[in-house]
Length: 401
Image 1 (cartoon, helix red, strand yellow):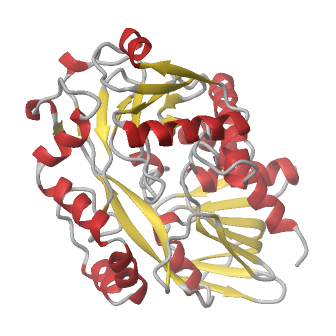
Image 2 (tube, rainbow, N blue to C red):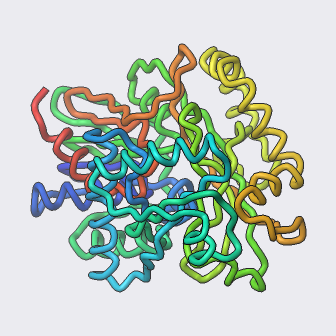
Image 3 (tube, helix red, strand yellow):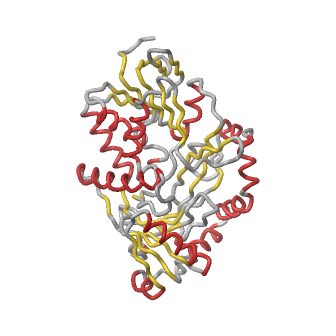
């Protein structure tokens, strides 16, 4: 087995968090030798390349929380990066629409939270909403001006090009098979190939728990894949709305609900729902990976989670099986949509850390040893927040203790 040079930092994972972390490492340690290992033949193949492409403003997060701060900083940083690298993006804004009295009360609470988070919003009554979006029905809405859209895969390609120009070695088609930490360095193997580094940072997304266990860490969680299923609207519907259209989220649920999203190419999508996946990286409907499924079913946290959220689980599963139910969720605020409008589109899969007691981990989850930092959960909006998240990870990596 050939042994390469000793790198200052090895990063596992070529999604947007891994790439942003590599950028932050070079900001913090100019001239550092960095190698990035990605098991796929390209960058941003999984979560980053399958999300809805929204640059979030951060209205949903608790005032003063790390997620709220990182989202605001991240939105500004992504837009600045796109301008610098000529990556197309659009600040189209979004409307969060209430369709009944309960949602109206929740919308008022959301508006107060946005103001506390210093996010510019505009309150719209029913008539103003109708003037702004004639095809949208609701009793009230808030307009979030800062929300935008971008192709995050294009962002990652630009990040990768910058890193390569700075001397970072990006190794594709490289699936890590062994990790061994000593007092002086970390040895990483991928088949017959081997790397040695003074620091290892793992940003492995859907495989993050397996990489942590491969490194000998004891973990109390498991990555559970949640499929986010989308539909694409036909080109004749591209002018249906001017902004992103979101429902008012149910605060008891971890997901934002089915929304209408403008894509950077001008098309519109609706989605996603959130159903348990039977494969971590299986995007076609009904994809099954025996290893992934057996690990899910044998994990007690999954059954505790399903028991606690039985009603929501049944509802999401029903929407996944029958397009009529999915359409019903869309027609609450966009009643002109028909079944024929819901055209097939590849799903996304969210890596959700679930604890052994059945609790969804909504915050960042890091595991650190003397020479390793494992990012075990990077919650939404990780793509929006990726640049400041990368800086935070780099700070953690190089801090003592």
